[in-house]
Image (cartoon, rainbow, N blue to C red; front, side, top):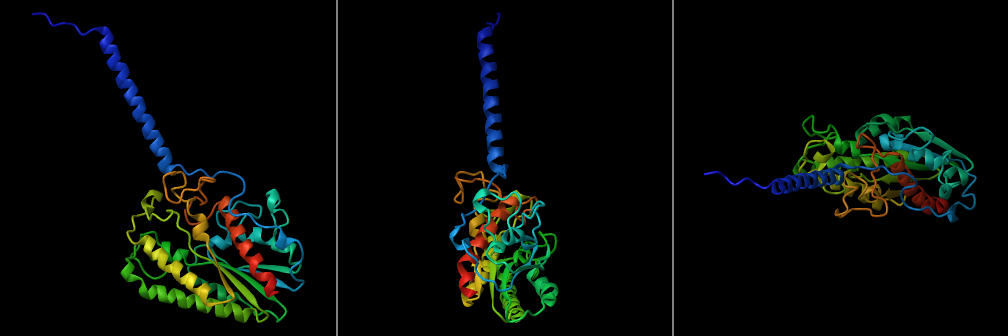
Length: 317
């Protein structure tokens, strides 16, 4: 008995359906890959606006030192040439400054500004004390110090899980391991503040940033290419609590909320469903090494520091 041949039109329809389903599948995979891994940097200004009003007149004719301490964020690793680190941008506007930021810098209101940046890439808070504080030389009573700092981040993230967790290289640590390390971090911050005050007997104000989170609060660092770390977010929170408490204890210390400003600009920046999503600027503010800002991140950080300096320093002078 002969079998009934399948109509050619039916075979063609099946083939078209299979091809269409395959195309839809590939499109969905492409979209998922884009939203999962795309990290557009974007262009133009980034971060909060800065009011012109505080910069309309000179703050003081006193000699003022802008002193940088800490790690690569204050040193400026990841910024391209042309004065685009946050420290350099605080001091003076770069040649390609955004129009809304023209003349909004410390040199425009402090004619006797001196710069000293002792920050070193890769240093922990331990090494800040060991290698940077000894370089501080006491100033005269007429000199005021504006001190900007980023420290503690390397304590948390080094050595990227390649070595067992220890103080100063805590990556992979359990929360129940870190009590003593957290207390020691707090003690080191006090040592730094004491040494800075001794350097500036004429007065100073310390502006210290907390530690940002490139996972945007999720702790899923594996999507950035590093080993999984179950307690990573809690360890980071413990260090940031120390920084916050340190600022709360001292009138001459101001906390810069770098973590809050950078939320939504980490590895989840394109994820519109994410709790930290920034609809107005869904872009990535970190450099290639994940530890440091890119140019737009440094612009945002400059604005954070500048706003707080403008709020606090004029009355101190």
